[in-house]
Length: 360
Image (cartoon, rainbow, N blue to C red):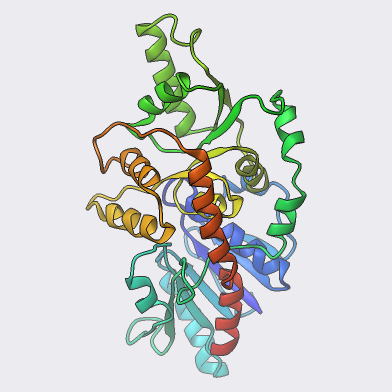
């Protein structure tokens, strides 16, 4: 089938990250994909090699259907709002050919209960340029009654073949040496406390900091600490490495290689689950504090022990207490159990393919 996936980059390139993974996974399974994006800059480092079967097209000022083959499936990612001109062209073709495309509104990931109730529901278009078409709501999720999570068919094999010791050795980390932690975050207020905790832990820690907001926040705090306490860095058991921009493949390797991962947003949360290592998730903040309910629902699904739940709450600003002690062994066991549940479910791309075939 020919798929049109529409993506608007809202913040931090998380939307395009998810859409690229989906497009590449569909293409790897034999589909043809046109990915319409209003800002393609991040793809230069996320996916520098591109992907056979995926054509990236500019969404500016409006995508055009003229002269292009009609798509079988429209994916409107995260309620981005496909341009009326494009929808009008689709509807006109449908009236002439009698074949309606499958129109899917791919929603944000959540563990909240409404996801199971809403997944797959149709929404007939009663007016406007798309009148007569039907849009379906498709919810990624963590349970069998949702759309599942993105997981490439070869992901487990690639994870098993990954040489973790060799990857760490390239950083100069000897077996049994430093604990490795990755940091991909916004600017959590608890970052200051995390740096202090890692600096005074019972074993040396190497913190691998991703480029962008995480690196800027970390550098600012380290500079502040060194000004207040000139010997802070010298006496610290924490060393910091600042990473370049990472492709999606390299980001997976980072998560697989570390003992503890700090991730943010939707795409990196899913990749942290598949990595199977202990992790802390910083959820995307919302003005109405709806992300607090979303975080609690995820921790409930994860069956997070008290220490992991408390760390998440402090890290996300829903608790003003101090960060609890890091318990990598217990947290890793929790993630492994959750991952096993997820592996027993169909992945998101598989479910999208099945849904599209059944509704054509």
